[in-house]
Length: 475
Image (tube, rainbow, N blue to C red):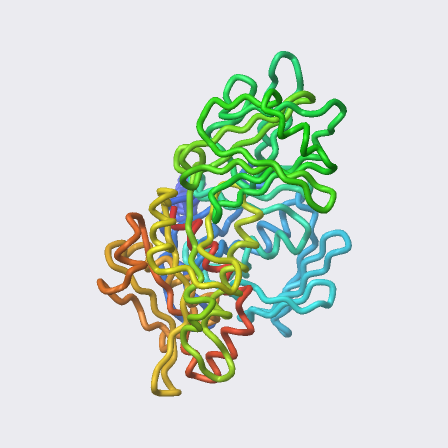
């Protein structure tokens, strides 16, 4: 009997030890692991990413990954099981519907479809939800695009490439507090131009100090970085032309052209520089402080985005569409996304229907010492059956590949290789030869192909979002 007990105990210990050995180790952000898509049976290797709520990693049995330029997370583990997010999750294998409810927001997604609804209104997702098999756990998981899901559930979502993590916070909160300074015990309010600065204007650090009229509130003063005209425009509600024109009311430390005008109930103070500069502005009750320097010295990340053609140059024409209009819509979508992300300072060669010369485009990029340059185009062919997406490059192939993957996702072609025309080496294009930084040109599809032209026109927002994500991910 004793011998039998020892045998049983030995077997139990062996089984316990085997269980410990076979338990999959947690995959941390940055490590590589395998998954198998259930919709096409392909096994692929992914790099793990995290999701964080209020900067704390959300525990999950299924690591996230990047699909094209979209962060994909387990619907259950991130949006269903994390009680802090306060979202109800359900999935029906019969209808392939994924339901997420948070407060008054009801989001319904469909497996393998980029079409979803939020409170009954149809929306387009940057990437389709997928069911994937995770061999390490021997289980299937429903993976959904974290950025789009979080924002539609009224949550903040930003990507942190250093942490390889999506940062989720409540609306109204932020993971980084806006910069404020104090000078001589007087509160200083920073006026943002849409990007974080390395250098902040203050009473001890400025290029020009402008005295304010007595009683002028900080909210009455706004600013526009009019970089196309190489100037900062300070806009003040009311007629203060005489006051701001008086030389004794300003102190200039660094060379610039100072001009004051009044029109339509507003006073305009234009600070013009010889080249494009980056600006930081702050206010006290008594002064406006402006600091300027080369953009690369002022900002953490500098990007230039170019909408191909414009004005008298229509670009390719086909099926009732003009390339110049399509590229502009896509770039305007890229801008709408960058406007919400203060990490980047982005310059655009055009945001309306005019023609910047080729040299203007790449000289702008060189003048601001950009980290990335992207030129957006639509292809054309003598054959109406030509189709697909390609990215042109000269020296920076990895950047081109990131853009190509995201462009395919934006076009809805991510899982269809017949539309992937790949990367094309080109040494004869001004926008690839001229810029002195990481540069690529994306040809999204063929305007000469009626189906593809219609597809591009209907997906400009989605394409723009994916190209925006690609630029961010390239860092």
